[in-house]
Image 1 (tube, rainbow, N blue to C red):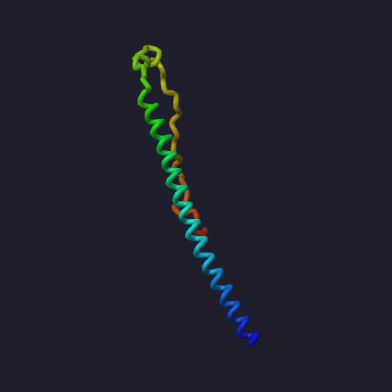
Image 2: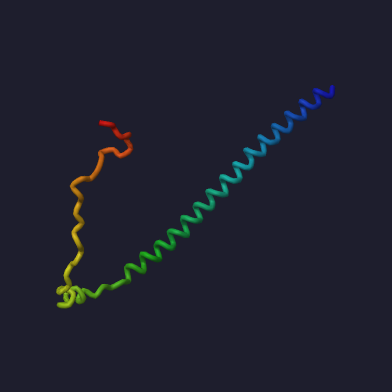
Length: 97
């Protein structure tokens, strides 16, 4: 009799934990979805506010027509690619010749 009681108690505990796990997953999943939707709404409102600010910006094109701007020179150095780049696949083991 004592063995049967222990078996039923163990089965009850296992079922209880399984039920608790699925219940927790259901609650945790639904709250995450609500948070994601709320986050998307906040981000989209911030994004729309930034877009509206960008629409109000006026660029003075006279700056680009100024002689001082046109007299600027580009001193960016040219980057030369070396002739000997290396092996096609550097991860292959070295071959002894």
